[in-house]
Length: 364
Image 1 (cartoon, helix red, strand yellow):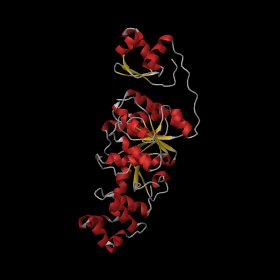
Image 2 (cartoon, helix red, strand yellow; image 1 turned 135 degrees about the horizontal axis):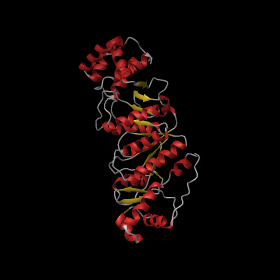
Image 3 (cartoon, one colour; image 1 turned 180 degrees about the vertical axis):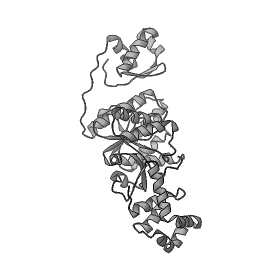
């Protein structure tokens, strides 16, 4: 890929991990579009030294040559990474219109997806099986409605969103917190490669950067910034997911949250968001109707009387199988095959011996 002088300048500046965003932006504003970078640096030495210090300035001067530019480009090409800068035509407008847009987006996959209508689905790494199931249902619905889902790459809700998109062969965006050489969690490296095949994976960091704790909340501004709206599937009060919600509100995006029963720690953040003004949603239809998207007919399920009895028993919350046995008057060995059939039908979800309803549109 051929880059303009302005794009090369940004790639050059962004390769210096020790420089903060503000410094890179100010130095770029001095150099933008000018091919004689060394001359500009020397002419602005006093102001640049005041900004970043003498040692960093000397590093910039030394590296401002074609050999170093080529070194940076070779590193990207070797990894099959494309760079989209704030000076590139393909930079997503939704992200450009946010405060502090990333100077460079490092991309694997189809970068054109970044300019399509996106909707983010986020949630906790540690959450209920029901939350995973809900993430999958909402992901399927927004894909069918024409949105591109956006999320991170963590375990839990993020992975559920990505896996569902991959299963459908649909476009999806994953935003990672470190560089491509340091996927976190490492166990999701294969998942990232699969996402890049059907969608796109992006980072604002050069590939060598290791993800640090502070990278994750900052990364979340990209997830919110790319999207017309954000759905919080699950979140503890202090969950990093709450940062995504805060960015969505700050950027004037639509914020949705799924409600949870009292005492569910992984849903307490969702309830708090709803109390603060987030739109309550307990069905994907809520989102589709909000955006005037077509709503699919609900699938009518045929349930036996015994299955309906179980649905009634679970209608007020998830229960251990022994509790279900007491409520229904059926022994656990009788309930187990009935619950297995309801799982296959998509009516209930299970975590160990605890069962809960997966659908809220059922009449027992």
